[in-house]
Amino acid sequence: MREDTMSDPGVPQRFLDLAQRVRGPRALSEAGLRERFGDPAQAELETGQVWRARWDEISMLVLVLDVATREVSAVPITIDPPGEDESSVVVDGSRTAFGVDATVWAGLVSWVPVRVLERVVDAWDDDIVGCIAARTQGRPAPAAAGVRAGQSVRSALEPDAEVRAGLTDDLEYLQQAPALPVQESGRPDRNLASLLGDRLDLKALCSALKMPQPEVMKLLRGKIPLPPDQIDAVASATGLPAGQIARTVRPLPADLVHAVEHPRWRSVWVRRARRLGVSEAQARLSGGYGTFALAARETGGGAADWDARLRQFLGDEAGVKGSP
Image (cartoon, rainbow, N blue to C red; front, side, top):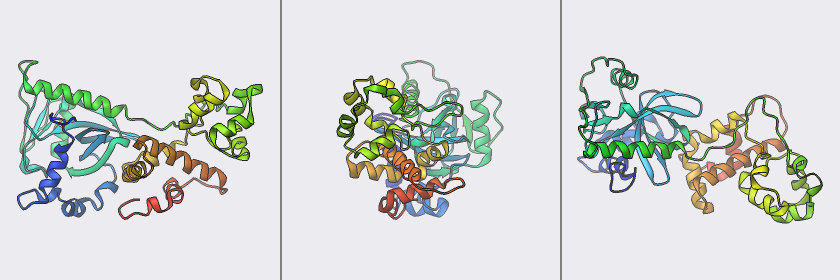
């Protein structure tokens, strides 16, 4: 959602701000959200929840219809200004926390990565969710109180058509938010040493990476991962194409990626990015690989508790009130 459009990132926030005033819906106030969800930033993902999704300057409200490991099936919701089309469902304000009619754009149902979900703001009753789910599948929608079908858009020049086009663009942008490299079963890893062969200049590589020789040796042998943000440095030092080097980057375990990308860690990555002066994607990437490297240096059997490992690696960064 872009500023001065239906996709204005301030739309969800405006309702949260209004809730701080006497006439605002208390359910969307900080106190109201905590009464319903505990810490809204730490809520577990569930069908029927309404989340604020955001990446960079793009923000929108989405209704979760199904939850997978790293993504959710979701439909966008708009509340200000009003708009609808023939595939949408309009929910009366008396049945939501917003206090105004909400349009659910059922024709735009999409898989949205969990890494862009930021904060849960509402949870809708099963009859509403069932009606919307039926509409997304082209089935007759069961009746639900306070819910009606949207009206058709008669022309591509109508404001509602422009709103729909903007939402489509914003969904695509959210879906392209940078993901972490994840291990795939059956794909062999190739380490950096095997790629470089007799091209290896250990001194030059240590200088380029600003790392001591023992650590660079571990990196070459795949004992510790090559952070993706160091690919260009290795390419410059070795003369090899960055694409070839990228194929030696050791992907992260799927369970670690699942933990790192979960919304419960979102506020930590935002704070870390601000502190380091980098993008949120870079903050999450360095946190994920830093945690993996820490785990690789430690011993112990059994499945890794990646949330605990993240807290251990981040230290005080993860100890701020409200973080995991």
